[in-house]
Amino acid sequence: MRFVWAVAAFVLAALMIGAGIAQRTVFQGPDTETAALSLEEDTPYVLVEGDVLNSRPGSQTLRAQGEGTIFAAYGRTADLEAWLSDTPYTRVTVDQDGALEADEVTPSLAVADETDEGSTPAPEESAAAEGEAAVDESAAGAEESADEVRSPVGSDLWLDEFQQEDVLIAPLQLPEDMSVLVAADGAEPAPADITVSWPIANATPWAGPLIVAGGVMMAVGVFLYILAIRHLRRSRGPRRKGLPVPVTEPIDLAVEGKGKGVISASGRRALTGGRRRLIVVPAVAVSALLFAGCSSEAWPQFAPSPSPTPSASVIVPEGQQAPAVTEAQADRIWTRIAETVAAADEAADETLAATRLDGAVLAARSTNYALRAAIGDYPAPAALPAEPLTLVLPQAYDEWPRSIIGVVDDTAANTSSIMMLTQQDQWSPYKLTYLASLEAATELPVVAPAYIGAVQPAPDSPFLLLPPAQLAEAYADILNAGEESQYYDLFDVASDQFRVSVAGDRQKRLDEFNQTGASTGELTFQAAPGSFEPRALATLESGAIVAVNIDEIDTVKPTNPDAVIKLENNPTVRTLSGAEQSPTGFTTTYTDQLFFYVPGQGSTEKIRLLGYASDILNAKVIP
Image (tube, rainbow, N blue to C red; front, side, top):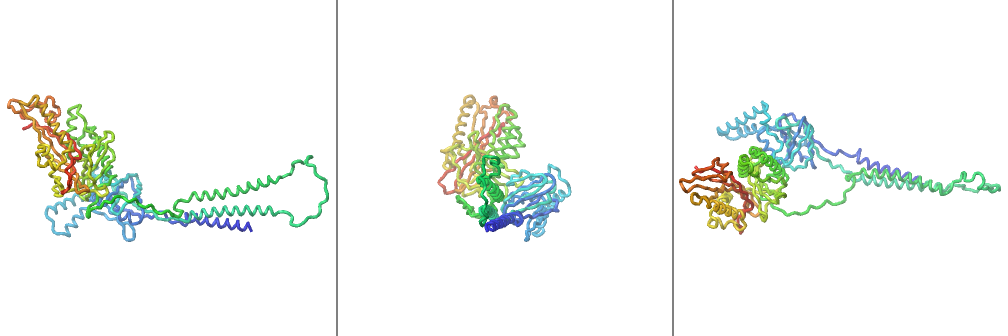
């Protein structure tokens, strides 16, 4: 009977293990669901929309196949469509049955359709539309040269991008408001074979328990088999009395045959125990191998899902648009700017610098390059720290231009800088337009997180203590008139170290000039709003961070008609003005980049200076 139970245990173990393995092999369904599309259009770009990527649940894997280098990037759908607004492309959508569809989009045809459906366009609009159509048709019929092709690689609009040879595989997890752009190099047709796949939930939670239970049952069967063998051996022997045996002589074990043919009981037991181990070891090994091959999907999941940690909530204003960039995107943009500017500074290349600099920053850099070319020991500008941004405040705006306020720490110099980055249109890179140093004790206002962004106050906004367009004029008046300025009480002058340094520097230069030229000339100082427009982003406390440009103009001219102003000890002004002396005098202009926190109307706070930078801009002979 013991053998019957052992065999039954073996059979049950085989069934359980077989069922567990079958769930993970022959009975298991496919791991992914795939939607494929073979394009016939020869457009340079393919836009795979977010509804395609989210037509099935789960993360997405994009696969594009073609010849040569394949490029793919993802970002907000509105940004991708804006970037493609002037070129033909193929739009990939999904129908009601889940199949992929491709439609060619031609912007010039869209313009013509809108013109036909609406009222009769003005002659200028009609001519412009016809001109755009002519340009598109000529571009489609002729090959563009390499320098006329806009490459998609490295655009600041992309949240991320990929490049691979012949076959591109990109794992994604994008929401519906994001899409993927697929291309070759912007000139050649985009890859024609595109597939999107999604994982399928095919967990087999009972496979693991069945295999383990089968292994346990196998061990039980082995144990029962051993007991059956043992019982059988113990039950061996005569079941009735035998015939009487004749009396024999005792055998002397000391004579020949000693030790021959004798098997001890201990030897028999040792042999039996060894066989038991040999039987048990394969069963345990098989169970261990089967157990090791089971992944987490082969087991029931009893643990509850972790609860998200609550965080401080920020209410997004109704109707506010999406932020221009993400934090990771802003870090990547800043790294590109720092690397480009570092190369431009080393070569004193204004053209290269202009690809990533603009406004007051570019003007100051251009002057520095000119002075370094003429004056051998003139110092280079301070390098931009290529480190991650510690604060990112993007503008919440779907159109252009867009702005970003950032703060970066220079660990090597133990300093911090605040900056304003601006993108003029969807095809332009972000450029550094304002850059200033932060004081160590500067307390920045509370701003919205990067995933919400901030709106840009209007230049004449009445909701701020001073409109952004008026801020430069007001502060310049304080530099000129001091406490007599009508704006003096609006500013926190007690913490303003820049104003103190400007006043001290003016007095120092005036004292030096008066030592030799007081009787024949005069030195005057004047501050005025600069030529670069202010930029501002709102804070959470109804205020705004505003960046402005102010020009400080030093004028030196003779008061004696027979006197001349010489520049023997001033190579900087001499180089910029192109003259060594003048009977009419010289003007030297310094450009100041200033960041202020401007509170809202009704606040008890005052306007605070957050950061500043000052560089020489130009010098001219007074006509």
